[in-house]
Amino acid sequence: MKNENIPAEIKSKSLKEAKDEINKILTKLESKDSDLDASFKDYRRLIQLNKYVDGLFKKKFKDLSFTKNLKEND
Image (cartoon, rainbow, N blue to C red):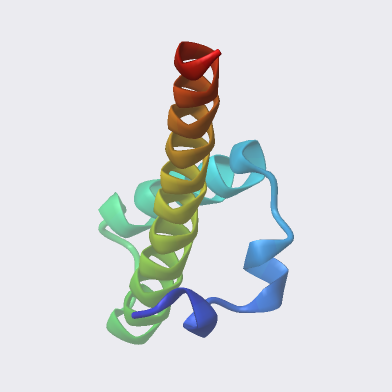
């Protein structure tokens, strides 16, 4: 799943909002009372959120590495 497959409403979330939603979904999926269809939809949402958060971390790491390299070259 590429980044462009992530819905815009997920891309507009802050890292904290995405993390909170991930935690809610995980709690729901761990529940024994959830049905299969709802669990499948929740799992797909979880994957999208995870890809989004992963992308945020990669971007931040890249930015930090670039900044570090600039400081080292000064």
